[in-house]
Image (cartoon, rainbow, N blue to C red):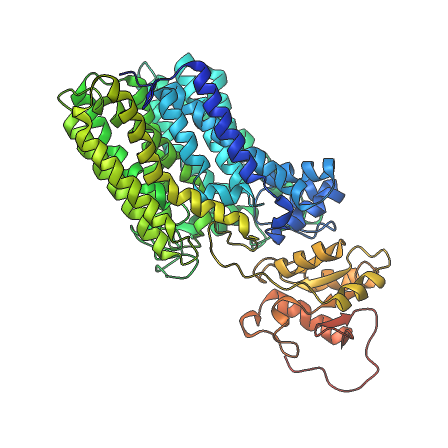
Length: 616
């Protein structure tokens, strides 16, 4: 049977095209469904998009506000795409998230094309379906984090690498390197995690001596360096007065790249278990909160590592198919190990970078097992046995994961179990089906396997459509989300009415509460202290200058001060942010806005009362 075969027989070009279009249209429709329901999703990045919509300088630097005092802690490439959309269509949730939907559909299409060139249309369509239905991929397609762009660029780099191997083309090598550089410009060193897989494929797949292969890797590396580092070098050479302070950088973009968003993410000390990070270790990805995001694919993807030995037993191995296993297997192994063991901040949605490799391995395994098992040759029995084990393992994992999330429909486990039972029955009796009965039996087997493996992730992912996913830790599925309450209408009305063309309507401690206020007001808001409150921006001297020049009038004690209106939050004492707020309290007039429990400091006047300020 040909590698392009399916349970219904060999794929024609027309059938393949129709199937791919169906996958892309259904996926795009689901990703784009009622985007406005998402609101502004991650307020931190949404505020940067809003700032870039009104200021080209803010767009270029990825600033959190149009005054360009502080930028996000990520490079701006993904933000540029969202900002271009809002500049074209106007700033709204749907226009900000539209590029995310389109990029996700493009990633599915690129994965299909990449896998097809190495392993045929059957494997590529299974891989595309697996990726499109992976819950973490689904939630990121409707969310304004940078990981959607990261996945697109790295799958694009894999495609360009495969094209370079086929044609011995420097042009495709340069494209692969440039796409890796673009991924670096999206999320710093995280982009380099799958790079060993690309290097392995070039080193093993390119003809000629090692010196020639090393030169090819060097060409791609040079392109990656040029595309990935030009913006960083510009940040290094520009004086601090000409650019915003990079959030979480400690004042140095190199520290941000290599430290805060680099080594410290992987090795930040003893392993710590938390509701967000899970438990660092080899089982992390198959336990909540990670299990529902990407774990559905893992049993089949891990089983794919055993398939090449069976294919060699069944007959001559295809060099391109071997390359496919090396590419996606190395990507899966390196990324999976890093994400499992890293002791720094590890959010479940990071596994979006693992999903393309897992989906590709699923496509390779399913079609190889089908191809060999259907031939009734000497390896058929072993292949069908392995296929049965993988179907049972995948179904059992789906049932266990379903029970781990109380919000999942109760019928999900029953449907998965039914699919497993039917698939096993057909596998055990497959050798007895002959003649005209074999084709319907094969089709029934394919449907049963699809039900057993896809019911869980599809149900889990579609549950996301009923949720408004916000905050810094987007999760797919029926996972209860906590949504911060909007600011009091009285406070919003007060700030809007008292805005007289100042650069900022207010300054607010920490970036996310400031971003939420900026989005609610529709006016620039200055974050104090960045995302964690420890960023040295704005400094006390800057705040003094802004107040003296009339660029800023109010400091709103929101964010961490909501629950500590009279004293500084204990966790933020002795931070740069506390020094700024202390100066504002000492030199302005602090009072509560009528109708709101939030206190506001007016920096343009001092209180007439002689009562001492609250103790800090």
